[in-house]
Length: 297
Image (cartoon, rainbow, N blue to C red):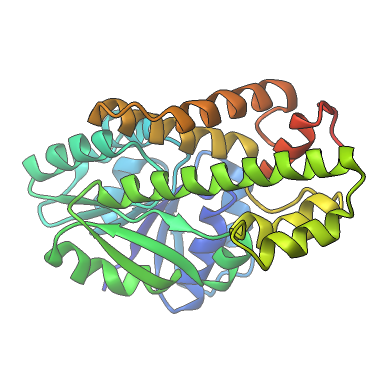
């Protein structure tokens, strides 16, 4: 196998790229941040890492290209912009979009790649930065059997659980809908803790009750004591990224014509929280926002 192209060395992309290097893969990496490139270079095995100045240069030197980018708009820029991937993709090339993109946009870009004899598939991830570092992410894969067969060795270098979701775009759709359900659970937990505090309840016991009863969800299990009651608010997922995933779920609601009223409420509250707190704080800070404490701890 030749080098794997890797574009996007952000909070998740950097540890994912490091995992690929640690598993023996060669990388041809690209990022607009010199700091991120320097961080990947530090400690990289000799002879396994090169950098390309543009996405087009990545496409010229790699047949499998991983994208770990923040939004569909950025993916489109990397694909279609000046010195983008599309103009340089070779027949047989495979692009793997591992960010959280809008499914309809993923399908559009896949059609453009197919017109050049290449393929684009989606493989968004679930898990914290800690799991990205450990290479134990869950990965939701959208694409046909041929694309999956080529991508699987690369994906297993970064993830522990690979879930085949269906056709191109299905992985991005399922990731967005999953994150909506998580956000709804976190919102309910945060409101319950705020009401419990005003009643003078023992919030640790309330958390135990929820985790032993029907209110249990991933937020009650992994965020209540660990991040909210402790005042740490450092679960590893930014408030702005949560808001972005909710907007992606909103795009699915619009595409399907479904009147998702609970989703609309989540979207509104997360937009307001981002406006008050900024996009970079942890997503568990929605608890402080709901309590009327917009200041950072």
